Image (cartoon, rainbow, N blue to C red; front, top):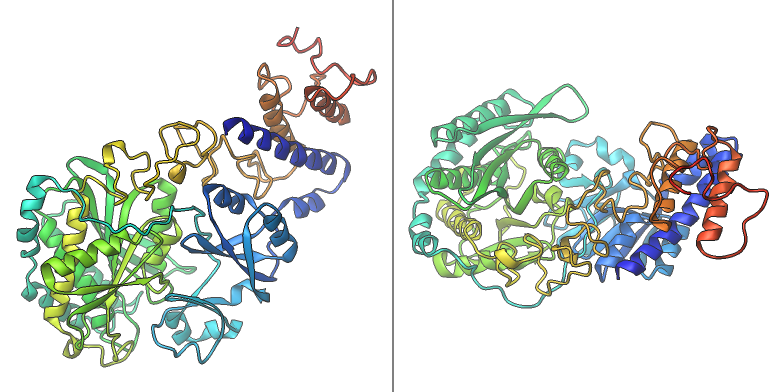
Length: 591
């Protein structure tokens, strides 16, 4: 399969290289070339549903002309035109047209769980708890819209394929000590503590992001982490298009066996401007604090990171800030566990669990609830309504825990402790603690039935363990599944390994990242093709400078040299006597 992959790369490179060579050297207009080369991103286009059935499909979508805008398991919503869609259909992808003549900035996700928004906006797509609307641009001027809707398209999702499974999950293998301690660990959760957190957060009047009361709540949460004994506890400042600072609050419990592996436990602590914001979301914040308190003096195999996110209500800004940076840094996150609205008064025996295509983590929560707390977790599919969403769009596995009966006091002045079931909230937290504690000390992090020590994709569900290039990484997590590249180098961080990436910055065609599109970019791609075609090729001659015939000048003769070289490489005919020898005498590497 590696040979077939190389042939495909060569053919693709030849096509792109030829277009760029003649376009750049003879058009006389760098602006025109740039317009041709860049991926189309018109103000108006169509919305498509793209279905992935393999890792190969994912690779095609990643590098293709449609722009993925939303990850939906092994389906993606994508934006572009019919020409781009037709190209991907011809490559074998299943693509369904959802809407035409759409402005990308007018696309929005529903953050509500009732039908209020359905009655106000044009529904383009609905699946499980995901609703995509077309809205007018003026809608974003409303404060209510920013808390009830979520803009789509500002952040590009990671395109991956995950093996589907219908197999039930078993409680993961724990060390004997962890298994014996599980019940006692869960019982360390105290309802009095949970209640105290929520009353105190309620007392910070209107925790609207960027206000003094919000900053006071920030300081309280940080002080709590520090009082639990966390030596690594800090505020993480970020901005959202202005000078007002916002702050995530973070505490880190390093793992004792695999500290580089992480479980994120998070909830947002900000609220809307007219509400005490107790269920939404002092309840989830209390869960983060109580789980941090319990685990502060308990050793775990992996690192736990507790995060109270800011500015969730304004557009998930705190979690986007954290998740985007984590992905850019290559953080190895096993699971992001998010709690948002987990305590409304009428709830008792049921909970909603939103999840991605790997639903086994949510199923584990259900088992813990059945075993320890009497709460029946209902697997509710995908949702874009809270702080798990940016992590999921960045390719991480998630659980989003929320109450079964949605609060009747949502975003109102009555969202107070009066309408909280503290017993239910505490049992929700106990179940969550059991889930993340058992997972963090598990012998099977991705719950695919393959022990960690032999799993070729430690964090990606892949029971088949398919490994086409035999490079120790399974196809499900290999950024170049047909080429042996155990190092997984990816210079442009586009999810495509450098060994498979035609050019690391092809999305913009500025291959040498010098801020302009010019013949030097062509030099890089031509040199790349040259080295693939001939094992003797060196970087110096022909090389990245563009002087492929080594006459100390970059000119049209270099183009003919390259074309002749390709011609000869495929054995298609004699050398043109007017052209230089593909192995010229002034290149000492080639006698």
